[in-house]
Length: 199
Image 1 (tube, rainbow, N blue to C red):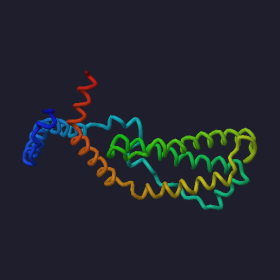
Image 2 (cartoon, helix red, strand yellow):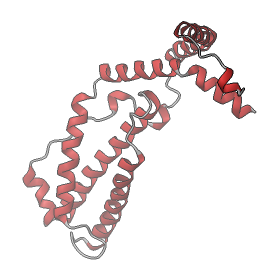
Image 3 (cartoon, one colour):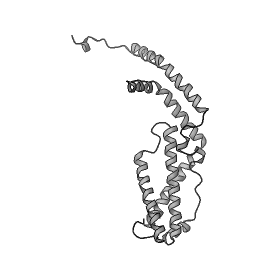
Image 4 (cartoon, helix red, strand yellow):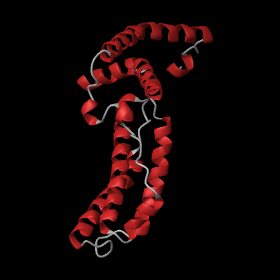
């Protein structure tokens, strides 16, 4: 008779006992991870060089009347200022994503698919600025149409204000607590993966 046929199915009680046994065996790993996280909380953020402190991410966006922004259509200096405003917002979104990747529950950061178009647009805006500075004109080869720049600024500003409104220290602490709980829960699996890699 095949082994699969001769094996007696586990009862629900046996399954529960096995789960309880496995949990008890893994508990020291979770306790060790909890202690590690507690010690880590007393130390400076080891990833701080990757991003500013949470309270410095999403600073207040300097208000500018739309009429001043529209000067970018005719003034090359105003056009460059508009580009600087766009670049500043993009930089904060990169800081935001890096902070999330290290401190928030896994999967909370902006995906590479979301950041890649922003990075590509940042490169285009940088090239545009160099072209405008060289010609002292807002249009020409290598320049982005001003209407597109104004539309980009409007969309980014709307998204920026949305994230800034929810970006409080309490919100950051809540995300960090969820990440810590996630790391504790995943400690046994992380240890197993390390053992496999050590080989």
